[in-house]
Image: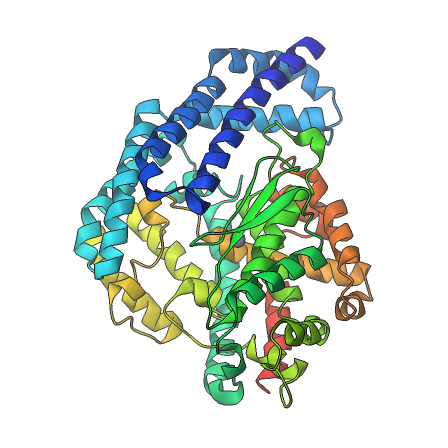
Length: 502
Ligand code: ZN
């Protein structure tokens, strides 16, 4: 067993190196690469990812995993070794099921579709994207059939992002969430003017905004010896191992909150990646438990911490220093707290507040299922989208750029991904109830700018496990319960009930 395990580790380490090298190239593409590099970069990435895939699906890996099955059963199931063998076997079985020709066809199709989507969105012309969308859903359908599923075709796709989660479970959770959100939003909608957020808008020096973002990152515990913040069009976080975690941010000169909350959001992702132990580096366990668990970290720092009253009592004096003269009396911490929590039904998901955000996700989740199951056709997607927007948010998008064309995911073949955003929101609230029980002084600590106890809790209960457990195993282990909507609804009702006096 030691020989086979060492051999498996060596092979997985090489594969991890190829993936990390590709990630460096992707990061560079989004941050510093001149436009002229695009063609060559696409080739480089395709070569590296292809090599990694070939090495991973090699028969030898299958043989090693088979040889290790019996000895692994003798190990402590929580040990790094047992988890490594279990997770690798799971990923190997899936990777072997999808024909390489289909993966290549998907890569080619989505690459072309991305350009078509950019143009379609710019011109708000869905017809430009429709043929690509049709082909992508068709190929993804084939992929799901190749992967196999028991109940719902969506299960096969969701599993890539939320290992072992089933569509029916998401539906149950979303039903519960919808039952709570719709009446809450209805009540808030009658009092939308109760909060004024004009103080967030104005002219904010770009260098000062950047300094503010760096300040916040340092405060929450992001280690700059093991990470960087750089600029990109769309903020994201990527890890080349716990010793080098990159996050990106953007600056809107007329709205400082975008830069501040992107720093907290991406900072949450980055803290997770920096918290994964060095022993898991160069293995398939060197990432979070799932996209939903990852998003629970970013949304916790962004919303449960960064949009709390305690945070603003602490941060308001600093904000004043970053922008002298712009937040003088009568503005105070309470007004900033209220402003960053203004609820406003809107067309664009990424700009949505905490109350409306998940409704945007439910719409996409329902549509993806309906498209895959043939209940709606891609040509009818704009109409279906608008009908759901009206039902959920009471709005009708004036054009498809503000509707069905707004997100990049479908053009990239990322179908089954959207639910993870909402699951992350729910999970953040579920962790936070546990954290409050364990850290009774949490609010006072945040108000004093002491974020270390919270980070320490996250490190001990979540980060240190990396990808060793499925999300369901991790959530039950930490909270004693499966993922559920109730903690999130309790959080929203308490916070927004007070803010909107309902
Ligand atoms: Zn995120």
